Length: 452
View 1: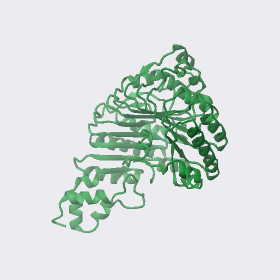
View 2: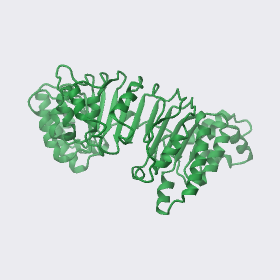
View 3: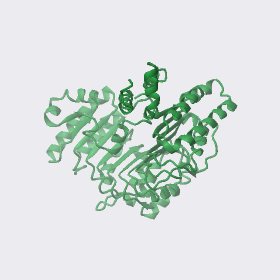
View 4: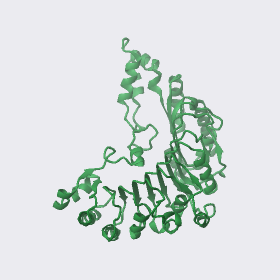
């Protein structure tokens, strides 16, 4: 062991760590196991600051270990994970001692402030919104020149408990390397270098149409934007004024992919689509009911056939969408080449099929169909739909789409001799499907949540 160079030892540790996964909390991390082999191994482990670069805290008992890791990592760049969801959600059932909890959060605040200048990524995942806001506040005026990713996430069930009044604030004043931010608290990092911004479970108290306009104006490099709201948006997102204006409020040349979920905020998608002009947008993901898109579909912005709203749009991803009006999607977004549908109710297959096989050229450039998360009974109905779509597009001399899906979807589709002979069917992966959000979601990152 005396002759093993520290950099080789460091490579060994990195290879033995799970890639893109959190180590189970009942298992000792590999760097700790190796440091317990012998005195020589321990000296080698402590001499390698890179081995201690993953700093984790998830309960008061783990705080001393996190502090020790911070010390042992010396001046090395680190990855910080503060994952309190399990601790806080369990404490809810046994009545959290507020005084002890506040002392713990104060210690975490000190840890966060001292660690931030060396962090390449920061994850804060809490059950209580108050905790997330307190930890966000710890980053105000903190410089983090190495930081590339930050995620501050709050459990939906904890957002309505013991909530502080939202006060939008800037934090991480020095984070010139920051490229990715996922935020569920009213705190905003520097925007000028961001390429991906996820604002989830926002309230209209701190994310209004005016505020989103300001964010986009301050983000000249932003490529990927994901939005969801925690409640109704009607008051601070006036749809009619957006329709009446006849033109978007903000133009962003860099934006390539937009994802909108309006599970708790019907009408959000229409408002965002009317608000934003993104001439280079290539991907749109909508987790909505299509009836909620009526305001957008009926607006002048969506009905300029010679000048489509998003002229370069290629990827359209629809999740749980009511497909009673597929035609409106084909008319508003005529340039689609990839159509992805997830959690599609079986009773909409017939209408979807009729719209794609009716008179006229529906998505003449469509060459890939992607299906995710379907039950077996729905997949058999999907098979009949795909057969009809392929047959009709051949008759109309249109491109015949290939099909991407998971193994279960392909297994059932492959029972059709016609489909086997007529189209390509491949298992979905990041090599054959390059939609920006799909690729981002399948990256191995240190700040992931859960075990997978």
